[in-house]
Length: 348
Image 1 (cartoon, rainbow, N blue to C red):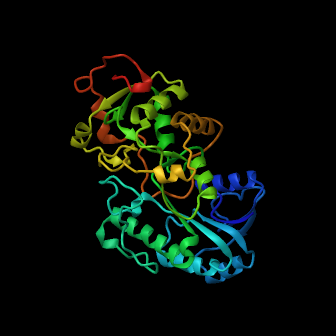
Image 2: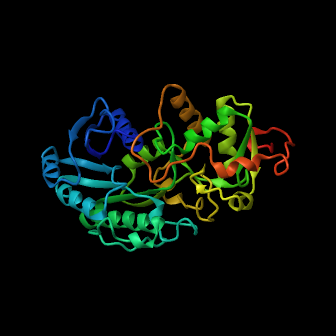
Image 3: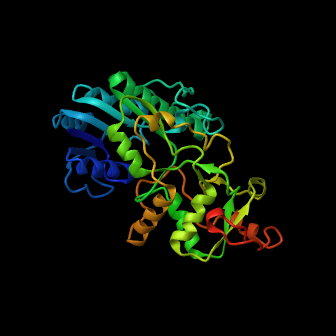
């Protein structure tokens, strides 16, 4: 089996490369060769996806049974279209890693694969949708990239729409942020309710599914009612050996104090559809999501073994000490009472 991996050095791309090599497949990677070393065992081709000459040169290394595209997060649809036009004759199938942001209803509505995505042409420029706000603009761009892939590969295309991906190698810093905060101990400001369900998916499980999924569109997320925020933060406290205590603050208290969702307290968002992504189609097609506690433990092991959450700059960073949240742990607001039950986020 020969595959072409667009990317291949960071987080998901690297996980896909490792998985494919473990299967005994021949792996060609295409990237600029600037961000990180190429994975030993791969056949690296260095070039720029926005360069017609580089794409033409890449095609000379084909053909491939499969293309897996994990590196188009910041690319315009028209740029993805240029690449797929070149590769359509050189590859049997194409897997494009998109995002749930491509849905018009995210993060406010529950989603299935039948939910409408944004309308965006496959040749849209980076400016397409720019006047509609950051979230809508990004969603339109991703929907346009999906359209670009489908325009060239049709029923030979697989579109994956993950929500939040966590695990070893994460460069956005969401789980590393919480692990670092848990390790410091003390009263740990925990957002919302411990019983709020969350659906992060492990990067290694996404990689496994990317290499085995049949053509079609799939939401890639953990089962909706399996894990909670209390499970996640409790696991962070447990694996770090922390003596910290989770102090839960209601959504309305946090918003009243100006705490920014998603960034100042990673993974916290009040929109009802944030963690309401139906992934049963993907599960039926072979997606297996390992326990969230395992993802937390393995990420902590990676960090303590010298792993650094670095890489391509995310769209927005996470503050490590959110100023608006400091006063929320005052005893008059959150009395230090109740049992310490890390797995359920015992009140501090």
